Length: 151
Image 1: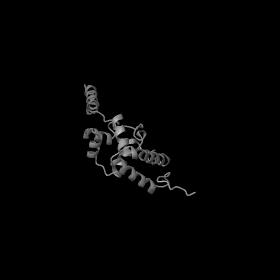
Image 2: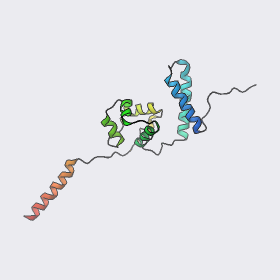
Image 3: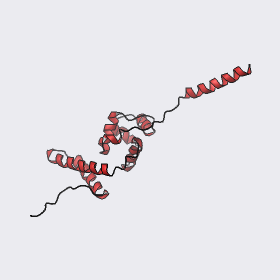
Image 4: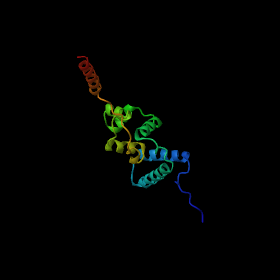
C-alpha cells in the first residue's frame, strides 16, 4: 500500500511557517467558498499551533508587539488608522502608551495580523501625562508659601 503525501503537515521550521502563512493569505484573498474553507481552517490551526509553541511575542507587551508587526508588514501609522477605522490621534496615543486598546481594536488587530486576541489583550503600563495645571499648581503653592514666609 502506497502512503498518501499530505498537502499540509505539522509546521517544523520557520521556512515552512512562512510558506503556510503565504498560502493562507492567498486563500483568504481569493474568493472564499465552501471548498477552501476546510483548507483555510487547517492552515490556520497549524499556524496557531506553531505560534503557541514558538511564541516569540509572549514577552512583548501589546504595543511593542503591535510595533513589531507594523515593522514586519511595513505599515505606517496612517495605514493603521485605515485598518482600525479610528482617528490618527487615537493611533498615536496607542503607539505612545497614552491610551489602551479597546476590545474592537484588539479584534481588528488580531484579525489583521492573524494572531489570537490574547496577544493584544494583556495588561501593560500606560504613560499618564501629568496635567500642566498640576505642575503649575505646585509652583504657585510653593511661591505662595515663600511669600507668606517673608511677611
